[in-house]
Image (cartoon, rainbow, N blue to C red; front, side):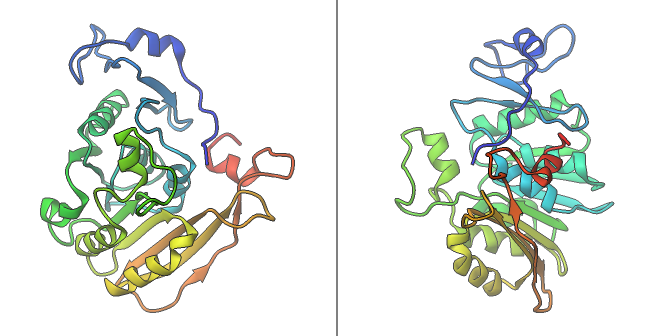
Length: 274
């Protein structure tokens, strides 16, 4: 599912394009872009993000998760598999947390995320770390974050189309980590009563709920996302509570498109354009 069209500041993008070292700045102190990169307007707090269509651009699932997850005052949040940093940036814009961290295994994506953090002046609020989700609890330590978010690879084995682009394949398929890895490490990273937020595909719900139960992350809220009101859901948003009591709230479905193909009012509100 593609995101809404985002406004690109073409004048600014052209002025920042370059072919040099990561993080290099021009004489005005602006973070410069590499070949093939662009700036996209996030339509919140004036923030923009560096993306490269040749790698992996964020989708609607990340935007929905950023509105579903809650980071309270003085809490720290960790985003596992952060890609180019979309979730830490949007979470910072929408919440009162004290610190946000993104963990990403692909250095090229992590580099773009760091430059986006610099570009938006968020170095005091957001850290981007290069590392493996499977080692997250060793990197950061147990019970180190009150909130963990994750928009993980959805596909296992040969599910979906195998893309010859390695960066895209890693982002979409469980090539470098599994659902079990994600939930196991999240459970270690959270203290008791810490919160876990994930967006995934409904066809994997039985496995998701089984893994959450195995690692004592109790599902507390779930919302299904439908492309149209009469179509089956193609995304699911889940909130879990480490060590929580059994009781889950099923929330009203989120419908993306109206019958005429235009976006619903709720979807537009989530994107901040209504």
